[in-house]
Image (cartoon, rainbow, N blue to C red; front, top):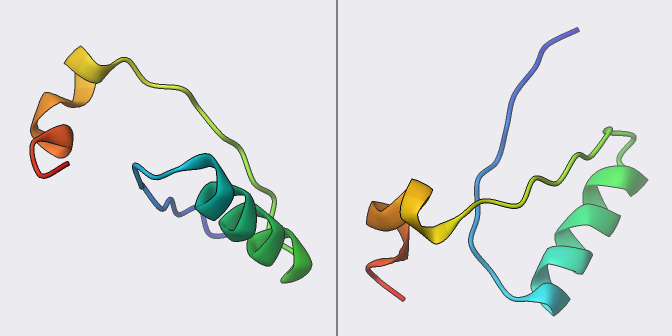
Length: 46
């Protein structure tokens, strides 16, 4: 089995659509909450 990950910072509505889509395609979805200080460089464009 191949492991891969998609990383996104997004609103709750869009996140739910992504989760639903991947689950419909048969993927196992795991969400992890991150602290802003752990991903500081990822939040600069917001």
